[in-house]
Each structure stands twice: as C-alpha cells, then as structure tokens.
Length: 488
Length: 101
Image (tube, rainbow over all chains, first blue to last red; front, side, top):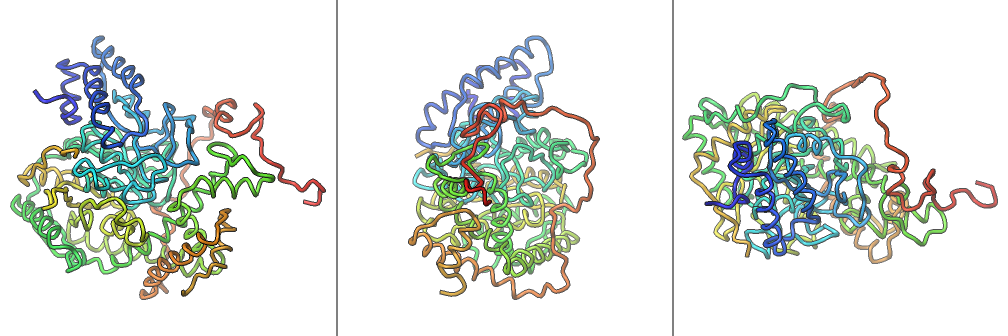
C-alpha cells in the first residue's frame, strides 16, 4: 500500500472522512517523512509537530462525534513564511522579522483550519518573496528534490520543494511575478495563481500590492481545485478582494474541452525559446487538440515590454511597502542608535539582504522626484497596453498557452551574479500578474537532464473554472507521469 | 557608466534610509544602470494617449458598515516591539535636546 504522504489531498480527505485512516495517522506519516527527508531538501523553516498533532486530533474527534470534519479534513499543509500565522513565527525569510510572532492569522489560514486542514509548519522562500531561486532566503538553502545541486525556483521554493518531496499534501505560496508557477514548474508540481482579487490577502505580508496573490501548490489539478474552493472569496478585511460568487471548481473538471479555443501567442514561440522547451509545450498543445480543442494563433505585441514594466512597478510598490520595517513596532532593531534616524538606517541596512536592498533602491529611484513620470507613470501606461493586448487576445480564444519557465531548474549560483539574468526567469509568468489574470503551471515532462518542465495556461479574469478544466484535461490525457522526485 | 553615478546612489540611499559603503555604492550604480537601461526600452512605445493603470481592479468606494469590531489588545500589539514600556513603543530621541527641532 502507498504511504499516506505519497497520496493527494483529495485522496487523504476522502479516506479520513470515510474513516479508512485517522487524521492523526496521516499527520504522523508526514511528520516522519519530514524528519527523514527534509534534512536533504531543507524546505521547512519551522515544523509544528505538536500543533499538527493537536489539529489532527480535533479532526478525528469531530469525525468520531459524527460531525462534518470539513472539505480538507486531515489534509496536511505547509505554509509559506510570508503568510501570517499566530502559531510559530512569520519571518518572510528575512533577518528583519526574525522571531516575529504575528498577532493574527491570515484570513485563509482561518478558512483552511475551519475546513479541517492540519498545519505542518512554515516553508522557506526568497526574502520578502523577491527572487526566483530561493537563494535570497536569510534562513537556509532549499534544494530541488529532482536534483539537490539545483535550485527549487522561487520565491515559493520551499512550498514547491515540499510538495515535490511529499513533505506536505499541498502548500500555500504567493505569486507577484511567477513566484508560485515558476517553482512549481521547476519542482514538477502544479501551481496556480488565481485572478487578482480572488483570494483574500489579509495576513499576506505585502511585497507589491497591485500584483500579489496567494495560491496553492499541489500534487495534481484536482487538488488545486479543491484548495481554491476553500481559499477564494470576498473578505471584509481585504478591500481588494472581489465580491463575486465562487463556483465549485471541482465541478469544472469535466474532462470535456471540445470546442474550446486555445491561443498560442506567436511572441512566446520564437527562436529565443530553447528547442527542448518548445517541443514539450507544442506536444502539450497537441494533447489539447486531440481532445477537441481548437488552436488559434494570437498576438501579444507588448509582451516584450512586460519585464521592464514589472520591475518598475514591483520595486516601486516594494519600496513603499517595506518602509514599515523600521525597528519600531516589530522585528529587528539595531541596538547602537543615538537618534531615530540612525535607528532606521542602521536597522534597515543591517537586516535587509542584498536583493531586497537593491529593489528598495530601484523602487525609491523610479518614484523619486524627476523620475516618476519617466519610469513609474510610463510603466503604468504600458501596463494598460499589456492588459489591452490580453483583452484583445481573449476575444479570439478562451485559454492562452505558453511555457512556464524558459529553462528547467538551474544550479546554485548560476544566476546570482547578474540580477537581470535572474529576472528573466519570470519572463513568461509576469504578464499574467500585470494583466491580473489567473495562470497555472502543470508538469509537461522531464527534460533530458532529468529535471521537470512545465506548461502554463492563462484564462480571462475570474475564469479559474475554464483554466482548471483545461489543465485537468491536459493532465489526464498527456500520458505523462513524472514519477517521484529522486531526492538525490 | 551612463545614467547612475555613485552620487545618485548615495542620494537614493538617503531617501531609502540605507547606509552603503563605497564598494556597495559602486556595485549598485553598475547594477541599477544596467537595469534602468533595460527599462528604457519602454520609450519605444508611444503612450501619449494611454491612461495609466493605477489600479489592478477598477473598483471605486468599497463601503462597509461603520461598526466597532474586534481590536488588538495592547499587550499583544506591543508584544513584538523591540522596546516598549507596557503602554507605548519606545524609540530613541526624535527631537533635538536643544529644543530647536
């Protein structure tokens, strides 16, 4: 029999509810797995063994009393360090929040707990979600379970590595420019960024407020649908959350995509895409064609400008958001400061890592007097052009397909010397954040190097149902099973 | 070296409340110059008649009932502060001791 930690969230949930296994046994299976395997992967920054056991016991008590134990009864979850939890610490993998105990749970944490989820602990990330390899964590180095010499991607690298190594049934990540989808791709799991506004961000430490979204990283598409059923919805605590009905996304997984129009942006399939990735994504498109979808060419002429727009907007917003870490109300304060200005400067300089400092500097520059119009305002204008490109493309198609990442996982240090080179890792994912669209990465095979590749689907705003239907249909008919990551 | 000098870096660092040594200033000048030069490609696009996308969702006036909700107890609000006296956050002096500020 397969061990419980190898199963999907929906299999676990069904087995727990049917009393084939107790939530306690499932939690123990994962805790043992973490103890045995995580020393190699280093995805967890904190493991909450006793807390998880207590949560699992409450689920089992509910079931024993014949009560509804929830839509995620007994499902063990890992949480990205950027999401606030009363339990443990919320550090954003930064020295400046070392030891920080959030006074509140994020709204999604409360929702997940109410549905019977069991929290195993917190997962490593690039400091303040800034990075594409998790190498910017101030806490530890997380490794890719498919090849321990390679990065897991980022910024939700811990979240992706934990799912790929069976260290949680699913995990929570956040995605500002690809931080869920790119690591999911590099670690061979499924990762979805919902539409901007779909999921409450109350309790998500802000990086770039007009781009950030929370989403799940899962073992399959059905689990992504199951997780979104719980995560989505209006929250009075987040004024940017959308007041729209949330469909049952698991009902959308019909397997029927006949007549759906799949858009291929010509700009994403040029010579600059490597032959191996191109071949894999084109075969994914063939699978959808074989299921009765119609493939159409679309054009996104401003896509080439997305990276420049993104790094102006995200750094500008980050420089404003991170100003709150000033050593007054929480987090680190430099001990040797004569006056308050010196305290701010010494605190920030000592406790922010190099990439965070670089982005604060860029963001401060593009917002500064004399440069605001040339950079920030210009970027906001081009952002609208990019959004309009997508609006036009979606009059011709229902889904747009691209690679998730230009390359599979790379070795540690390969891109750390050149920030722009690292930024290019997100070339296919950032446009969905700029255009506020939902996007999902699904594994589409292993490269010759043995590392996973991923295909990305995008849909119209708030059409996660069609997005999941196509992703699920692809997953079921691709004939691709990655198997388990070797963790070597 | 193009648009960013180490002097510019020093000025921006002051705005951002960061202290940089000479090596860091030089490295940042080089990196910011490269990144900002890349961003200049946006000037290829004519945006004279384009409205800036100020908001990710075009919502206006999100209202709610004006009712008192749960608030954070003071001891919890102060719990994570590096220095407090049980009532206030404590910070180093802000005003000049001469009283001129």
